[in-house]
Amino acid sequence: MADHDEPRRKFVVGLGNPGRRYQGTRHNVGFDVLDTLQRRWMLGEPKTAFGGLTWDARYTRFDEEPVRVALLAPQTFMNCSGQPTAQLLSFYKGQPSDVLVVVDDYAIDLGRLRLRPGGSAGGHNGLKDMARHLGTEDYARLRVGVGPCPGVMDSADFVLGKFAKKEIEEIGVSIERAADAVEAWLTQEVHAVMERYNQAP
Image (cartoon, rainbow, N blue to C red; front, top):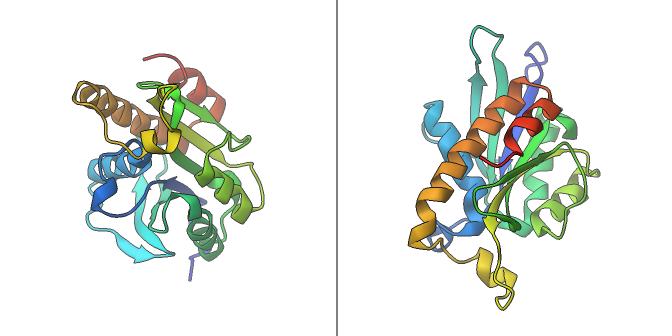
């Protein structure tokens, strides 16, 4: 059971699709951001729980008090990501306001980030399912730009495709910057983080 004497916990959920065939695709940048965080924090192998892969961490910024963080990579496929997240929150008695969901967005140019404290799913099926299971849209989301999607191409085919060779360096920089934004969100006021990271790099 959760330890109720622990400080308030935050939850970072990276969305993607499980399996080797989806590795390196635009739709899996949420997983890639979590991978970056767990490497930075030297968390090691994940546990399997709540229908996903989880890591438990304490993040410390400078000499501040550490923040308890649970990372979750749902293994239920993108469009069914809400239930694992709801199970995680239920176990730790967390609130949707303590959640940051990291997702791809083909409507945002490659290299750009967009952090919001809440709002609509904007057509993203993973976020739609998240709102359905959490019962609210009042949770933070960090959209990682993977676009633009060519007008002649089906958006589903586009996001399930892999990055072109010329895009790999830029998306790598964007994933690192998204991980920076997650770390800032853990300890700073969300609008200050938005002002910094929603700007063009």
